[in-house]
Length: 179
Image (cartoon, rainbow, N blue to C red):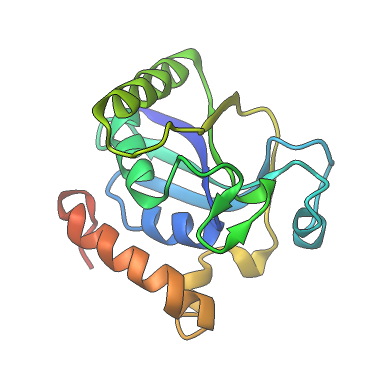
């Protein structure tokens, strides 16, 4: 078994978290904060916009089942990587599109994918996804972990997470775990 770790941010981590919990080969999912300059930030700290941390989801995955490239294809289908510090109504640096790679191979794959997507005209604007080395990751508070499953009737979950998750599941059926 070949395990690896990567952290991805594409807006509110509840959307990214809920989607990647369904992906075959993803063995662990943890919402948290990374790429900022404040040690041990809280959600309240993140919301001030002064920590420079992004809301991210750290994924541990088995590369024998799902490759880094496949994970990034899924990631880019979950958000708009062309909007700087924003996803939908969520605004601020904490909502930026970011890939925090674990090694040079992940960096190479991400860089190539961004170039290919930009060249493909998938989006009408250039991709602004930040690439950085994953150095420090701070787990989010326990109530943020697996938030959608625990709070499916919460307003944001109904209006934003649920439709995004349904679209993700229908578009990527081959990557979704059964059950």
